[in-house]
Amino acid sequence: VNMIMDTLAALALATENPYPELLDDKPHGRHEALINGPMYVHIIVAAVYKLIWLFLCLYGLPTTINRYRILHDDVYYKNDCSTVLLDKNYNATETPVLCNFLSWCGFPEGATTRQTPSCYLYGGWTRVVPEDPREAMCGTSHVFPGFPTPTTATTEDCFWFKRWESAGNDMYNEYERKKLESYKPALSMLFNSFIMAQIGNAFVSRRVGYELNFFEGLTESPIFLSIMVFITAMQAIIMETPVNYIFKVQGLDWKEWLACIAIGVGAIPYSMCVRVFMRILNYYFADKSIISVIRGKKVLDKQGSVKRGGSIKGSFKDANNTRTSSGRTGVLRASSSLTNSNKVVPL
Image (tube, rainbow, N blue to C red):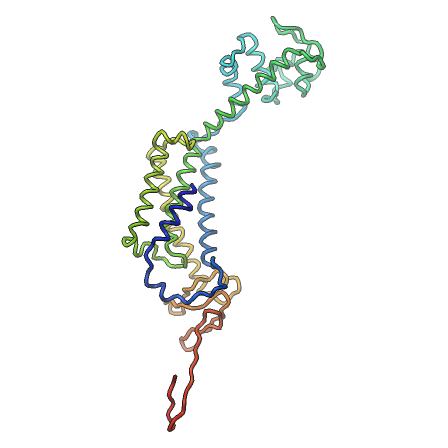
């Protein structure tokens, strides 16, 4: 991620050929901010776009599509407890009892069935099963055939409590491992979608104002194109080859790849819409203080053509179709005249 977002992306954009429109920009002063208003707008809207898709992948997919559902602890404890404990060398006699404690008595799962016959401890208490596991297991009058008779909750060598503690740790560790595996499909989509969106954002970032010509001069930037192809190829290798084990992701099918590519390409029209919206704001509210902070160097005049000039501090007027500025990057006009034989000679 760091290579794509920092190293390679910076290298791709830094090696872009300059375009002629740069000569129309006014000089930048030494005290001018490195990140201007339009840049802040692009940073925020790009972050919002990515966050929307990342949250949908992380929280939306597991709740809507079975393929991405996350393993729940109560389901795992009830369905897989016996298999796990037998694999951990618990004997076949104690395993059902321990799994009942773990899954049906609320230690830790099944708290709602603790006070029902589903919990083995329920029959050993005249009123309610205590919430404290030591008291519930060591103070019960229920006798499990083949095992020591429970005595009191304060007995240090309480057999069932010790076995429950050991089984609980084994079940918890195994559940955490399985839970991480169940997250892998959704996390794989999240990772791939993020990289695709970042690639799309690289094309958008070729213009840092409110321009719409993202692809102008693209064929003259072989380094940029080569780096984009390299990033895409590396991402495919990471996702679809055995190295995905290192990145804790899994391969995607063609439908998932299409969805990820669509998310990446979607960053381009999304940015276009934002830039058109900002140009409209500049056209109607250029004299407002809030809009002046996020105004770009290109604004629309009343005829819809693009005019340059202006800055965050500039105040703009429209007189005789002439745009003037009293800001730091406004147009400075200086003229002098010499009178000689009733003739005016401008300098």
